[in-house]
Image (cartoon, rainbow over all chains, first blue to last red; front, side, top):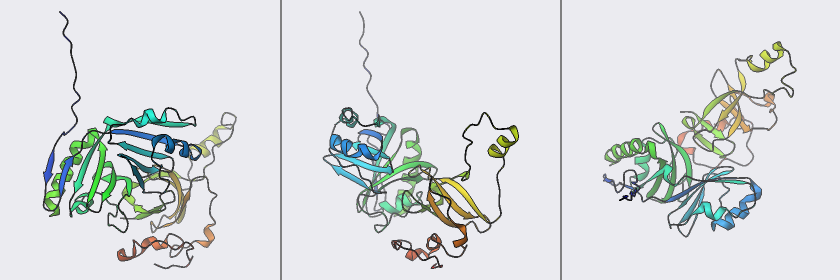
Length: 183
Length: 126
């Protein structure tokens, strides 16, 4: 008799969390993510299809109904959907030339929260994360230690750090040590 | 750490996010098969390697990932000007190592978060 094999996806670092003094780290639930590249003439159509206006200002993001679009470059966005939607499927009907690639499981997201959140990330990130330079809603691709990350400020004291799955051990270790020092 | 102005991100970013990509304004021959070996050598291998003001390509690799051009003083390492790829070579006679549009990048730390004025003076304000 044939046995039915089923595979369950095991998210990296699922459910891990660390608390420091004034800062907490938590690995976030898996989400749908899309890497989107498009020329200016398709932005309006893509925004309509996605239900969120693609930001065109550097270092900015736009969020609506569980879906966040992060400006990464003049023609590049990272779209994160935490509401269970499929952004790639939503873009499929758009006629204009664009590239929409599902990168959901390429990234691991870590929430850094608390009054010392900015200090924790700043331990390895050379960007100015003060509220004046990096306000709520600001998003940027940058570096943490020796790996590339995407930082999104979701609140005055909360950040979402996105890194590649294969770098997540390093990022988690780095932020955990930084959280211990930040207090 | 140097702060380099990315013309696409429109702000100063830390040096660690950038990578040098060689000399700028080297035009690829339109018909590369027809040029002589000497001309190919000049195009492909020979670089000016000047002391003083140099034109360089840089890439904001850990940021917007775009290539852009920069005028840099190879003696002092100061960036005098950065501009988008494809824009014409700027007139360097108006730039000096002390002033110029990038001079305010060398501001003291407490003034770094102030937005740049829309029209910047060519005289040093740092």
